[in-house]
Image (cartoon, rainbow, N blue to C red):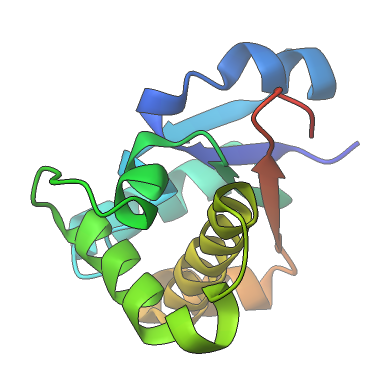
Length: 152
């Protein structure tokens, strides 16, 4: 049985949904927009320690299509300034013509969640501390998007 670490946004309140779907023996790391602060070496070392100590075999990056940050970017709303929102805004702006133009708001939310998960997965894999450890130990990184009606 895989030991799973879910990286989730604390504002999405997804823990009960995930526990119902995956059981109670799972771990959570909360961070706005399920982002991972790769520039912080202490954070990387702490996360590696958790993965190692708890023998995590699967890391699941979770976003929700109802995320207020995702929908704030799509609807061009003024939001608090933090690094993860800036990354999200950049992903949206950079990919608007090729990925978002012509999509409904719901489809845009899904696409932005998908891009966000891909971005942070690459960040983890390219980091010196976490990336090499994850690759060496065959730890799987998976993306999960939860829709507005809380279905997985």
